[in-house]
Image (cartoon, rainbow, N blue to C red; front, side, top):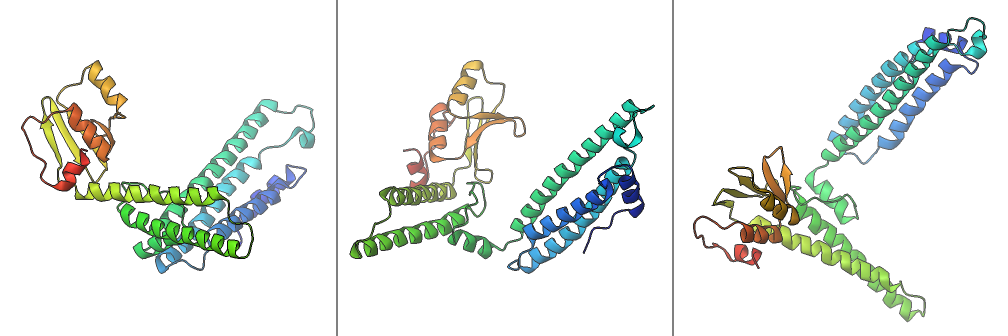
Length: 297
């Protein structure tokens, strides 16, 4: 399916240039469209992704036709001095048209980049839970945020891949020694083991957070909230804290959030420990569970 641009505008743009500016614009439009198909056409899509892709392809084609017709409309009014000749050439007018062409071209490329990014997000969000986990079991490298609802399951899937890969490394080295061949370099296994331990530690951390039953507490002058949904420790003050307190908060990685009207940092066992050390509860409250106690160690 080819891009359809206004033929009259193409002809006018061609006539106003030495290098068939109109035809080149049409060629560029089709290249944009073909690049989109090459990037996003994928036979392994599930049904929802296939539907998204087909709809986005139609929308992208309509966008290209509308935007590049607008570009041609501007372009067809630009006559370079090499075509018109220097006599009575309206330099200021043509310079403005040239600037409009440049601005329009940049606007189009910026919107294409945004369209690509949004399309990728929509397709990624359309994976089923099991499809997402299966990708991580096969080495998917997309970073996993602690506040991702699937963070724990993704990390366990990633750990499965890392441990399988590590065993393959060890198996290769065993066979290499038997065959008197060069084994894998030691740093490769060291890095592999380090990655495994890092993921294991994150899993332990998230499991602790999931077991945390305490939502927060009151202190003299405000309130602490342990927001597991947002994965943040949030400090709410009744009044603006003084400079000394603000410095202390900053020294412990707390930042002011205008959106939440709170000082906050990521919810970790260390963050909970520091918070309880700085802000004493107004009432003595015993930690209810062994998991909560372990968080303060």
